[in-house]
Image 1: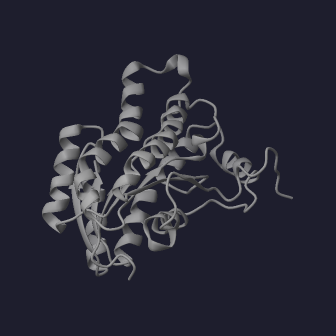
Image 2 (image 1 turned 180 degrees about the vertical axis):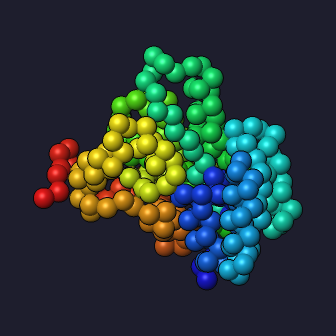
Amino acid sequence: MRFEGRAAIVTGGASGIGQAIAQRFARDGAAVALVDMDTEGGAREAAAIRAAGGRCEFITADVSNESDVMKAVAATVEHFGRIDYLVNNAGIVLVKPLEDCTVEEWDHVMGVNLKSIFLFSKAALPWLKAADGAAIVNMGSVSSFVGQGNTPIYVASKGGVAMLSKTVALDFAKYGIRVNCVCPGITDTPMLRYHISRSADPDRTVRERLNRVPLARMLSGDDIAGAVAYLCGPDSAGVTGTTLLVDGGYLAAAEWANA
C-alpha cells in the first residue's frame, strides 16, 4: 500500500469529496485524521473506516478558528506521531448576489474556504518539514478559473485557493514539501445538491450543466480522491505549484453541447 506508515489530515472529511479522500487514504494504508464540524457524520465515517480495517480518528474543529486548528494538528500528532499529508478540502458555498451578501457571510465563506488553508498549513508545517515526501493538496474548483452567477464570495475564495497554493508551493519547496491544488468540476456532493436546489428547476439545471460537460456525467468523490492520491504519492514527485483540473472536460472549450 502506497501510504503505509504515513498519516494524513483531511478537512471536511465527514461527507462528499472529503469523505472519499479519507477513504482512499485509508485504503492505501495511511492513518487518517478526519476533521469536520459535523460531529455525527464525522464520527460515523471514522467508525466506518476503522470497521473496514483502516486507521482513522475523528477530530471536531472549526477550520476557520486558529485555536481549533492548532488543537486538531496536536491531536493528529498525539494519535499518529506524524503528519505527512495535509488535504485542505473543507468548503462551503453561498448562493446569493453580491448586493445581498453581508460582511459576516463574506467572513464566514472566506474563513472556511481560504483562511483555513493558511491556518492548517502554518500549524502543520513543523511536522510536514520532518516528513520525507510531504505534500499539501488544497481543494479549488473550476471557479478558481472562471466566474459563475450568484456566488461572488465562493468564486473569490476559490480563486484565492489557486493562487495561495502556487505561492505556498514556492515558499515550501525549500523544505521538500510539495503544494498543489485540485480543481473539481461538477461533482455529485451534498454541497452541489444544495447549490442546485436553489434553482427554479433543479433537474433541468443538472441536465443543462451536464450538457456542457464532454464526458456527459457528474464526477464522483472517488474521481477527485484519485487526483489527490496522485498528488501525494511518488508518481508526482516532480509536481508542485500546479492546479489540476478534474472536470470531465468542462473548461476545455468555450462552447460545448453534447449531441
